Structures are given as structure tokens and as C-alpha cells.
Length: 133
Image 1 (cartoon, rainbow, N blue to C red):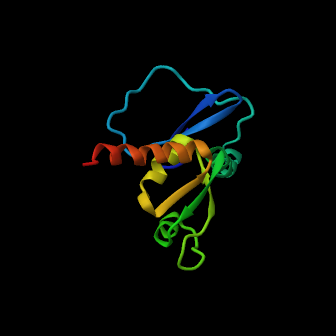
Image 2: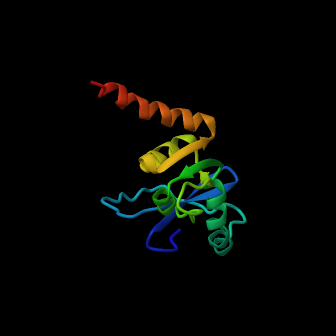
Image 3: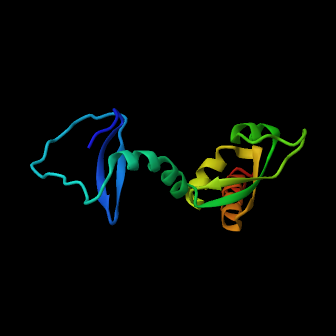
């Protein structure tokens, strides 16, 4: 099923379907296997509800963070004055947030969840010990 240049198919997953987004196709191999739409599937309804469903699955938790004004700008948070402000940021997972928050460096302090805070703190300590003279 195709509904745009970037969405090229549906894959049945249990009781629902999953869209696949493609940016570049380097090679395409046509298979003899055919795809049958699931019973009762409605394309228009799926396209209408998919963005909200995707966002709901994407952000499964949140982190309490304290960004600098620059960190707040990079996060898209309105800073409260000139100092740091606390904000709750939606996160997909601890692993994903770890990578995203590390990129902010010293412009962000993670307060919660503790597992994420401890992991980032350990990452910050490791090079400090390595480069100690």
C-alpha cells in the first residue's frame, strides 16, 4: 500500500499495522509473495489516527531536567529568567534520552529518572579520570 512518496508499505503486527517510512531506496527487489490487507483495515482512518498513535508510543516516560538558558533554547523550553529552570521533557526510553541529553553537554543537568542521571554522571566522570594529569 502506498500513500505518499515516503511511506511505502504496511506490515501486519498482531492486531494492527505498522507503516514504514523510507527516505532513499537504493535497491528494490520484487518478490512473488503478496500482501493481503487485514480484515476491516481502513486506509483513511489509519492515516488519520497514525500520527497521534505514533506520538503516544514514542514518548513513554519523562525526565526532569535543569537546562541552562542555552540548553533550554536547544530543548525548545522557555527559560525562566537568566538562571537555570527545571522542566519535564518527554523521553522515548532511557537509552534514547541518554544519547540526546549527552549532546547538550554542560547545558543540561538530568535530575530524574535516577537511572538516567547516574548513567550520564558516570559518562562524565570516565573521561575526567582518563585525562587527569
